[in-house]
Length: 341
Image 1 (tube, rainbow, N blue to C red):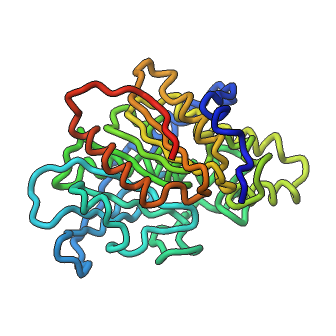
Image 2: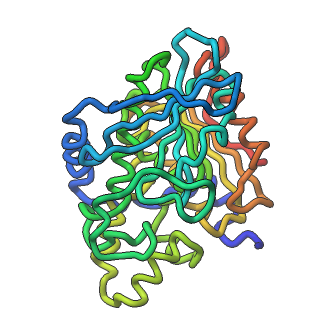
Image 3: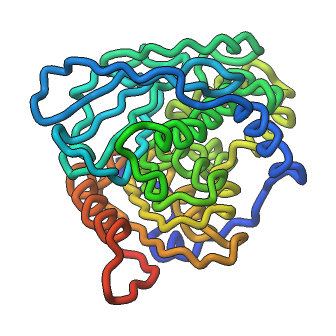
């Protein structure tokens, strides 16, 4: 697929005007206040993953409306010191899978929590274990369009709340240095990580790649690929529902979350990505932290010949190197910047 979005020289300065409802902050404050009325962790049971160098627990924590959400918690075997933690969010349609699938962050020496996606897990991977008991609102059939007509009903209101609660949960688990928690994700997971960065003010870092739900209106104009294509498919049947749909989506906009974030941030984007167009990631990056006054350390890496896979393992190595510098601050000062793959 050839590059189809703005050229890189324009992306580096792309700052669309914010389109967010006046009660954006009130909406999310109320949602999270309701979800935070009980202790996050329900249980943490050790499991035999078949791995000798990794210890794993099957965790259940309380997410949106107190619903039980599953996760895998892993850490290097035999290490008793309190470790910095990485909370990882999975991609669209994927569940938490099996505990031996995601080992990069554990092998790098971090505690690692992989959150299950409520109601998802049936499209690829090895499945999920968390139902979504509130999925009865109009919309669908995909999760991107579920509850599309009202912000309080949308699937991603619940999923984003779960993602915030996952950070609260990991801070309660044994062997975690709660002052040093990062969030990471690709695609849907990147969108969730960015939302958490805008809602949790004391993260140590956020690492996002090809984030979903960034520049939503432009993405719907550029691509029919799923998950955005699920929204356009719904609107092609429910003609006249555009106003309600765009109002709902405005509460989920990643650029709005990015504006409120203050943790150091690491972005990755493929310039030929037709699933999550690169202009959304750049808009979020360019406006990242602008409402906080924190001037956070941030960088973005562009891969001109890659699509939704972005820099793949090359980018993961960049993430590892960058995260090590964040958790153990270098002696020399660093500056924000942009680099090309």
